[in-house]
Length: 422
Ligand SMILES: *Cc1c(COP(=O)(O)O)cnc(C)c1O
Image (cartoon, rainbow, N blue to C red; front, side, top):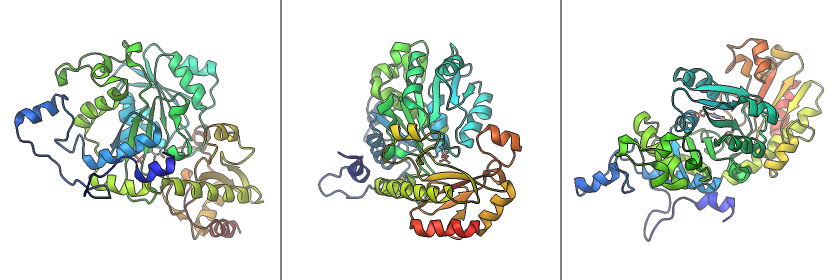
């Protein structure tokens, strides 16, 4: 099946006389005929539902769709993108472990890694998304357990050379984890390039209507945990909290990562999505292939308009010929990248503020990847605790405006930015 057909139909196939739309199983718990039958679930001897903190059928239908879209072997939903990224790392790491990550990532993820997970004893080395092979190799340590990056970084819009990064991760015996939120699997399928685990903030394009906060994790099933058994004891040695099962043995290479993540991390942290949110997410997924095309078209048209405007200092969009990341974007996302662009208005911070206040179609919001065009000045909002020097160092200069093009008509969007620049 093609990606568009999967967006509409994958993950849920009703039987005779069953609901055509995914049922919302709004139930915390599930009934069993005997304690013995339920016991099998607790021992991970049988698959099934017993408590929605761990798993819920509505969420699993949607997870199955996202897994098919990414071309993975197993997947799960989480209550947010933050939870997805946290779980993807914490499923592999304990106190004393180390991770190499691109420095140019979503601010919330950076804080999670550099501050909160550091307090848990997990150390991160941040590298440039443009790091050379030598720089990447030098960042690895004997206790490194993963390499992490974003396909297209939010908001810096840097593109990772997925194939090269994944190869280097594998040379060090660790998986490459990629946050694929911005391109979505419609525009990029990282598993085709050697990436092992993909995460998403489904809050963004996958939902696309600003209706739910959510996340997803998908496993490619390609990473051989036993080949590096000493690095990943959580997957290759007995879990005493489940009567000594060994995940990579019992659930195989395709199932171990996600089963462990649900059985341990969902059980203990409970970052489970509400069934209704999973349902809303699926409504978004049904049109993802159509919407991504329109978001990308609108982004390119507005980027081209801004590039020719005499009040604009610079435009950053990886879909724009001449952009630093254009060639990488063409390689990994030949059909379009994402609908988010950034640019600087001549006159810096003050000019950016004036521009923002004059917009009528685009709304000032802490959000991206929505049906409605939205705009943000990070130096005055998400990044306001940083000095100008720190802003420049993290790739988000004081004049940077992030514009997320929605599904409106391109002519109206161009007229709006043109008016605001006037
Ligand atoms: C928004 C975002 C996140 C965090 O997701 P939430 O759903 O807000 O928790 C993570 N990564 C990227 C790339 C994002 O854009």
